[in-house]
Length: 381
Image (cartoon, rainbow, N blue to C red; front, top):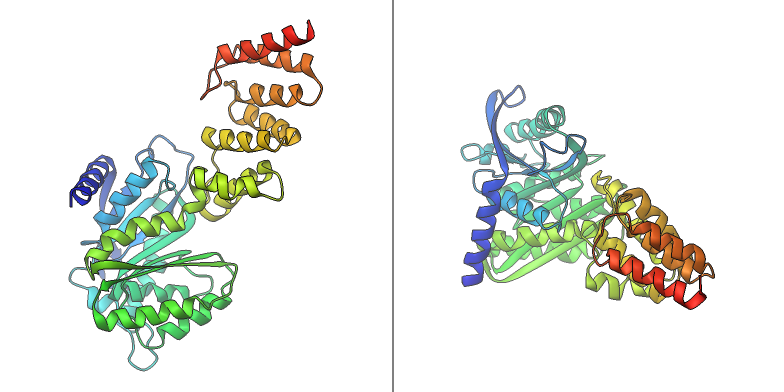
């Protein structure tokens, strides 16, 4: 209980510092005005050249705050990229918004109008008024969790990420999802959640769907499933949202101890190539073209040293000079590579030149001078 209260306090505190805007959209599709909430990243105003992934939250009346709070908290600690969170208020229109035909079980009448509102009016409005990236996630709960699946049936899909919290699955949805996910040619992340104390009529089809999703063999699709112990239809939401964000954005996180030990140290190729590919995937998926974190430079360099991959360390040093030209990072890696490939004099001068630059992480002026002095002593320069 104490841990839950602490987490809620942290999320509320983080959410209070985020920028939240309230907007009204006049919709021709709905023939009405629809209210939305928009949370912008903390650094949105300062980073005028940066675009952000978009997370669309159905049931914005009650689901927006837990999603927005988690997004702000996780992005603050670099556990996921900064993102724009948009909540659609559906308190009085939820049943109409999620209506589907009882013959073909596809959105019809008011449901079809809402489907088009999101794709043809809301998303263009967000793209025109905010700096959005191409990566989009939809979040829904029971009725709306089922409804977001209909967007996956379109080609290309409006969303690349789906967070389906205890969906109230419509007839044929299981078969349609499995067929679509097996054939989709764009990258899709699909998160599904239920709980041991979830509503029984929802829980059984969800578990059956998960069994079918496990049969999907498509390299473009990544599925995730959680069955939370002793959680209800409503309490599972608070546990599922952070887990879903962790799963979907795992590739974008800083290199962890686990990733370092289990993946990087066991690579058949160079850790340098792994680092470049990691950030290339992040750019392709999320539209984020960011500098490599200093933490990731250090993790990669450590692996390169362990493997005596001095060519890779040289390439890492040149990259560090490009991305952090005012720091000692690049000089340190280049000098270390020279030192271990038979060019001690060049290494000594490179260490000495780095003395004029800014310290970074463990690389200090004293370290650079000590390295240069040791070479001078060993070789008598």
